[in-house]
Length: 410
Length: 208
Image 1 (tube, rainbow over the protein chains, first blue to last red):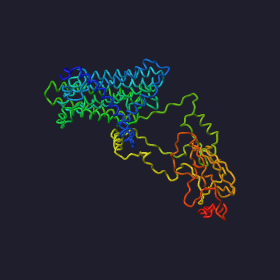
Image 2 (cartoon, each protein chain N blue to C red; image 1 turned 90 degrees about the horizontal axis):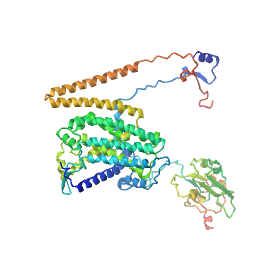
Image 3 (tube, helix red, strand yellow; image 1 turned 120 degrees about the horizontal axis):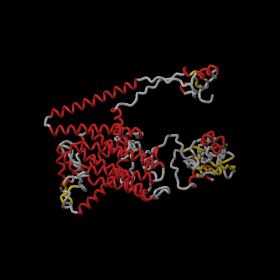
Image 4 (cartoon, each protein chain N blue to C red; image 1 turned 30 degrees about the vertical axis):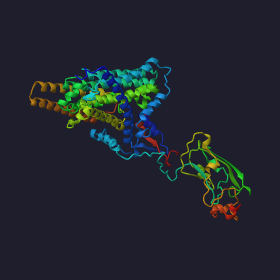
């Protein structure tokens, strides 16, 4: 293990680098998001502050920091202050287990750019993400105000619901890689194909639930401007608001990094370009890693630029009634396939099982479509008229006013 | 239900009422949600739009001309010899729905002839904090003294600066114009001015 013989100063330096990378990436991604969404809407986006508006987010940060820091009179002061700190801290901590590079020479020491490698690294990420929910719930509750409370509740319900689907989608990865450590999952993908291809349904479910998990459009119900003003952070201003903002973007980067690690082969080059991993003394793998992370980030922005916000009940229904059952069934299939392929050498059994699964899925979907068509064709009988007095319905109106001269003045 | 019908038969239809069954209508077909792949077209739309030309005008650096009849800042026009067209009638002020215009007229005298005829606008103010650029003042003006330019950069730092005086509103002196006050073109009346007979200042006026 390269990580175990790291001296203390390297660990400190790595922690600093992880922090700096997160902050810089946040600043750049805020700029990038605004530019990309702007282009999707035929605008140019921020282009005034610095070259191409690159330091726009920095300027916004300075502006936020200089603003008045308000604490509502009804707020629970201590919790109100702690909440954004919990949110931001949890967001940063998730990055500790991400393997950013392969083996590299770091100031004369052979190491990998990964702060720590836990045997249950992915579980740790999930756990930290759950802790992050506390920040949102406490922020909503401690504001002592209605909209933040509702936003906080929505947000927590949302994150908890989609965390289940997310966790379930990861189970298939654990089954295939035989590990929960991020670095060994990356290694395991080198032996086969990327899990994004092998476990495509898992990948899709993860990709959907990571958007739900980070409260991003089209799942940004927690801060639905039209309904809840700003959601859980309505009462926040100045640096405390900036912390929430930071946490949101670091979270996006973190789930993108996790998706990269688990499904797109982590820091490894795309198949066929493996020779590039040796460039720059191995540091080129860092570039591969960030290319993949930014790809996911682009997907986030693309979704935001394309889809309208979901209705809350539809969103919950989708999470609980579609994503979770499908996840469970998929795990069942994956686990069975895994058992078959490890115990028996015969390919026929594997393909036979896969074929049966496909047939079952087709059968179910056909039956579903049939029943839907049948339900649509049922004619609902008119209920009998009640024997008590009722006001007339609009459908019972038999005459309408029509102006003889045209217009409403008649 | 039965009561409803009875009351209908008792009450004669009004002259402006028609039977609802005689109104034509078209049944709207509601096909329900589109297929998944049709919905994916939305993603292609936003993606393709990224590579299209943006609509933004980089405003302070690039200024696109306004529409020809854009309602911008007002201008008080002059006759070709430089006399003011405004006769101080206050019709613009009366027409103004926002009460943004203030006019004080005064008499022209032989040694202080500002406009052809008897009267001229002594004080002319437009308050651009109030003006809604509706153009009713322009319609009201009997001498075409008041028109609107296409200038729209009217922001300023104080309220006082946004009350434009006559000096701010008067159009520039063009070739052949003389700054008033000066007498009318020799041998002409104000009618000649309105008929467009006066095309430039008389040389004798320049001597004065």
